[in-house]
Image 1 (cartoon, rainbow, N blue to C red):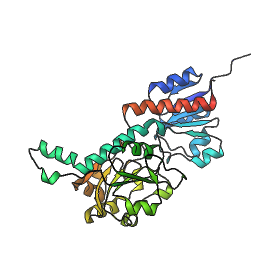
Image 2 (image 1 turned 45 degrees about the horizontal axis):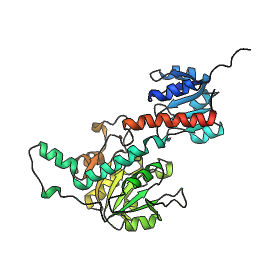
Image 3 (image 1 turned 180 degrees about the vertical axis):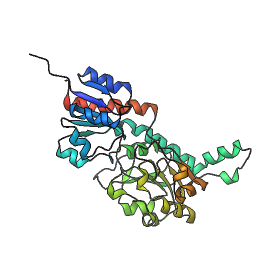
Length: 320
């Protein structure tokens, strides 16, 4: 009797070698198509038992229909806005993500952004490099004694809350998808309570259609105190035009944005020259800190994503 062919896994995005190595050891036929053009990828899809992706392709009906034997999609990372989850479910295709792999990186990075923002660290560094020695103008604000509000209390929100221990601040969280989620690191509150109490707002929610421009003028106007805003979630969650206006009128004391509304789908490119006026206003404001979508992109997180995905695939499908 001939041996059953090994299930094919197409790697459409780079990952740490451990994912390839562990899947191969489990008996999968791993094939490197990271640089393959779209027509070659589509030609190979009918053979695929699984695919490993980031954000290179829209995993839509056309893609999934071409993958006639597909059993799983392993998304190295968190966001799934480019995957048709409903159609995948109809096809009984499992979609794995790996937020556990980068939650610690995001938790630490969010702390870093908040400290930079409230203590003007980036601005002061630039000034000293220019030969300017400005002390009073860079006086900071302490986290101690303030209330930190976390929107979204999953992997990332929890990791941030844990790292706030020791700052002597109050931490509260709101998550519309959860119940009984308060813990030793954060108290669960209603959205209304969070807006009444928070001095600092940190966003840790996925991009969903209902979250598009969630943080707009009306949302920001609902806070009792001026807030420092940190966004390490998705750029499209915040309406940049409204954020700029809130920064200009003082309703937002400062903003640290790891993610920008105008990023492309793969999050790897943003041409400042092509962006609207609101983006250029962000560049001008001294109380804004900007990052190129790197909060969850530590060296340790990359291996964490690979290990997490392999663990989930092995647990679900076992040795081949």
